[in-house]
Length: 216
Image (cartoon, rainbow, N blue to C red; front, top):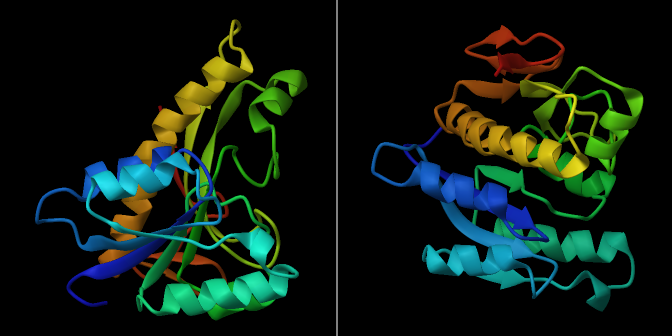
């Protein structure tokens, strides 16, 4: 891993996790650097967050392409122009093609607002409350061809309170996301985190199926 790990961030929305990365990477001691932020939506507020931080931004409108393969091909070309060591999904609301995922195998991370493998997909906070679960949280994982199914790197677990709503639960989960995503990126940038044949490795040791677990 080079002295500085160049990162490209993909997003479609407000960029809360991007802001957490920007704040975490401030100062000279962080081994990662955001080279560019790319969005498929020109109105994504995350682009403004990036511009405010002096980070280069690009918009690649998926509606301008016929099909996912054409869009992902153009997206790969754009990403690769920055020569990143790591690609980070931060609320990028696109289902990626198998070819895209394979191209970045072992250097593509995502964060999901549930304790995977439970509650893949959308509306996780509502689904947790409807199920009556005692715990909820968020997960960082390597991206594979299975949606929200790649090897887990780190999970943060919170308790579900009796008076929680989807909104209050989401707020507490977001707080944990903003902690664990920069941490996972730091591990990768330091050369401590990698993807092996059996799963995610931290310091050369295979992580448990749930990844590194943090309880708050």
